[in-house]
Amino acid sequence: MSPSPLAIAVQDLVFQWPARNQAGFRLSIPRFEVERGERVFLQGASGSGKSTLLSLLGGVLRPQPCRLRVLDTDLTALSSSDRDRFRVDHVGFLFQQFNLVPYLSVRENVLLPCRFSRHRRRQALQSASSLQQAADRLLQRLGLDGSLARQPVTALSVGQQQRIAAARALIGHPELIIADEPTSALDADRQGEFLDLLLERCADDRVTLVFVSHDQRLESRFTRSVRLDDLCATTPC
Ligand SMILES: Nc1ncnc2c1ncn2[C@@H]1O[C@H](COP(=O)(O)OP(=O)(O)O)[C@@H](O)[C@H]1O
Ligand SMILES: [Mg+2]
Image 1: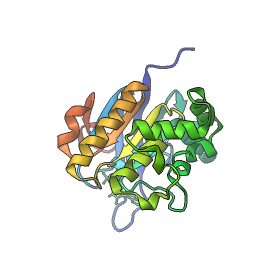
Image 2: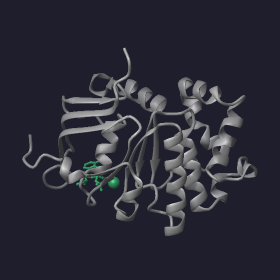
Image 3: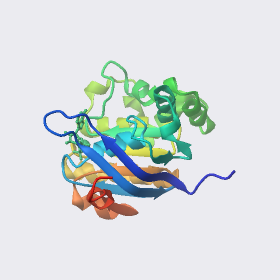
Image 4: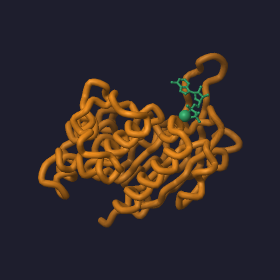
């Protein structure tokens, strides 16, 4: 069977956080579809549920019974450990705070997904003769000098650290990249530069990108822009 042209197909998705103070937050999305290769800009007010939606799409959280297919996989049918496996094999995550491992070198950080996923390791080795070479090439394509590969990540600037996080998300060709405000910690010049590199890599590899930001200036660079408010049901299901 040929793969569906949709990377993401969501129908009647409902997720309810347990209450912290008063009523718990409820996210309710009747329909949301993203085609393979689309680069989607997702915006919404703080607290509107953007990070919650990204966690659902990446299989970190599980919704109430609904249709939630990501890369032809029914995420609602998977156990928590199968969702972890799905994520490490097929999804690259990028966060505002990078989440790099401080005691590992630059290259070791980039190669983390290959340590946990045979699938990513195999994919990385399709276009390189060693994992080291795959990591170093990717770093280079993201504008980082190869001499940095063995340095501790903590020795590098914020802009450099975010590129390392991008290389880690991209290594082994995951089909989907999920980015949660990854430019928020960068200054304006670095934001544009970083976004150019990320979008270029995604376009080259036909990666689907869902990118959350509250910075409207970035919107025009994407193939589609979506407001979370417009996706959400006005009356709770
Ligand atoms: N771990 C959690 N437990 C309970 N409620 C949470 C949790 N994480 C987020 N929420 C609630 O879910 C709502 C949406 O949060 P979030 O998805 O982080 O929004 P955004 O990313 O758009 O700022 C908020 O009201 C927040 O308080
Ligand atoms: Mg958030």
